Length: 408
Image 1 (cartoon, rainbow, N blue to C red):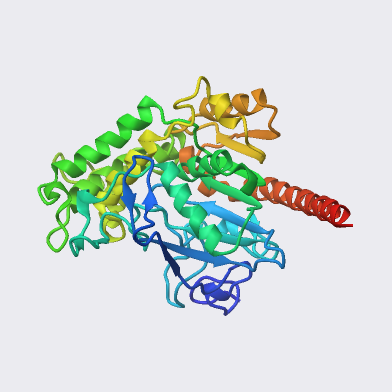
Image 2 (cartoon, rainbow, N blue to C red):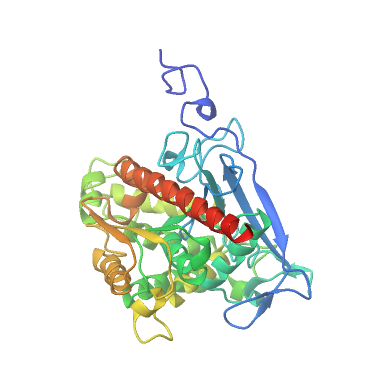
């Protein structure tokens, strides 16, 4: 029997097998004066609030924690539902839950909204304690390194000394790499997906087009638009550009082709003719309902600044001290972060003798493949995590045996 909501049983979506169900957003605030968070730029930020969610349970020795790191437009709500009547679950719901890629029957999965964000974490829309008004452009510029530094404070708060894995796609993959480099003793496995070790000129160029669209919106007012009309038109155009980069020629041809939208023939005007135009406008117009234009500026600038090789003779030197195992994914049709950029990471890791597995997935879905090809990734990542979990258990046994021997 199929219920009116399309399910094969009468259960609501949040009670379906494999769902983590209803989840509760949480927050953690730290970096109170005079112990503000010192950013890579040298600026100080505090207090800092991180919004986060957890799924599954920590085991007795807190060794089964997996930190998922979100992409540009993501947030802490990676899976499940906040309320019974939510229309959609979290952004990677197909990957997180009982029996899924990140199996919440075995692992405790954590995801937090990055600093600079607008979905519960401190960002440019937050109130500046010095003025009592939203920061706007007075918010300090943040980097991927700063995002990870803030997440480290959250892990301390949760009592997690060592993460079983850090994983993420796109900007999330950048954070995963930064975690492995900055905190080598706190990461057992790193799973960067559809990402790079340093942003290319093409990535920076595309991000700048989106920022210029926001700057050109008369409602932007150099970031001081809070309390008045918001720069929705500029942010919508930025999002449209982004969506083009997330797809591939094949996926756009398959999904849209040259089909007309709600017309039987061309209108010979400047209204919407093609289905792809309609799709981009819809995506663009929806985005400002959940995202802040200034956050878009700050997060894309953090992506632009990302370069693990900066200040080093070669990229491989960034991985000199890493201790994690790596599972690196790229996708053949991803032109935003092409496969050669993942291969650059793999070569650098191999130069330093790091244990790394690399898979270039044949897919036609472009950059969005990491969100779409979940079934394929599930078996690979599931087996990888299970193996790392077993190896971590043996490592802890050796440490305990060594410590006991010393005491005796």
